[in-house]
Amino acid sequence: MKPFHHALKIDKELCIGCTHCMKVCPTQALRVVEGKAELLANRCVDCGECFRACPVSAIRIEEDDFAEIFEYKHRIALVPSVLISQFPEGLPPEQIYSTLLEIGFTDVFEVEHSVDLLKEEMVNHQHNLKKEQKPAISTFCPAIVRLIQVKFPSLTQNLMLLKPPFDIAAIYYRKQLEDKGIDKEDIGLFYITPCAAKIAAVKSPVGEKQHLINGVINIDSLYNKLLHKIKNNKSTTCRVPVENNLSPTGILWSLTKGESSVMPGRNLAIDGIQNVMEFLEKLEKEEVSGIDFLELRACDESCAGGVLNVNNRFLTVEKMEQRAEDLRNDKRTKPEDPMNRHAEFIIKKMKLVEPIRPRSIEKLDEDMMKAMEKMQERSELMKVLPLFDCGGCGAPSCMSLAEDIVHGKASMDDCVFIQSMKVYEGAEDKEDAKKRLEKIWGKDRINTYRHKK
Ligand code: SF4
Ligand code: SF4
Image (cartoon, rainbow, N blue to C red):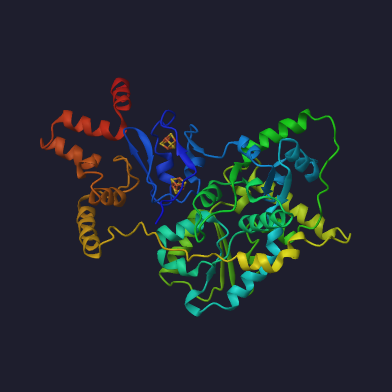
């Protein structure tokens, strides 16, 4: 299996080894080595929790260079409905879209146009499920899909094999431009993302061979560009007439209960990665039953809480709900949604072409016999480790340290309690103990600490 692409990068120059990121990571994907955070690529699900927790902004979220859009003749901004709600009150969507055109895009399209077709397919999918495939789990949030692959592999069979709205919007937009005779090579689709997980999903897609999106731009950096232009632009004329044909369901789809409110049967909507994990643990242990559909989102308040958004998540939700309400009250005849003209083609293409496979991080070895031996070794180590989960060894918990030891990446002496006991009993030289601490926390930090004393 291809390795996961990760959008999160740690800047070692800025990292102060504070372990805040390590403590919040839901998949124990971080370690501290020589005083700097390190990412274990097979464990990270790009949820962005570490990014939120870092006090010195040493974690950044990679994006494509904005200048790349100019490599294409047709430059399409695929925007999520949360984008509009980032801007100050009183700024109409038309003005934001016009500014997107002014900075270089040739077309702007809200990805939630795909929701009405997707919703029907999700309902059909649910009707055809076998008992063991219930509850069906939405694939909307890519961090959740990865979380299930690595931490709850037995639940991958419950994931709905349907693409999320931004993928479907890309299928539609490419199709309609190609139908007009535009060369494939001239079309550049750029998704404006509220989170890191969607970047990772575009760069290493799950359940499909290749993504139709050419690049991803982060909302926070684009917001600054747009706001600067809007402030300096004296003219209030808007070049883009925004069609009022995005449905209220579409606008609210990326918020909590956006999907579950339209699905039949017994449904739950859970947001926040820790809440999701707590529920999935129960589901895996078969402690809950009778649920038909699960909407699971990694961020608190779903996409309104995306790490790249600039507005407060609760204010974002309020603005999106108001926009949906205004649309409900708008009695003017709405033009037909442009996607309906290609409905048959899109429905065929919205299914994932490959199954979503487990990538368990719980498995200690590919070879069954070796995995059993390592599991035994891990249990033995756990009997000796203090079980304080203090993080002093540079791993988030005693269990993580035990696993690192069986994988040959750490040693029992990395445990600060065991080390202190060895020094106390004269089984380890003080200088060796200091070198061990330096290996975890870095020479500079240990020297600074000694100086402080
Ligand atoms: S993005 Fe999430 S899973 Fe990855 S290292 Fe950060 S907290 Fe852990
Ligand atoms: S939160 Fe993590 S990346 Fe940020 S400074 Fe602390 S250890 Fe380094």
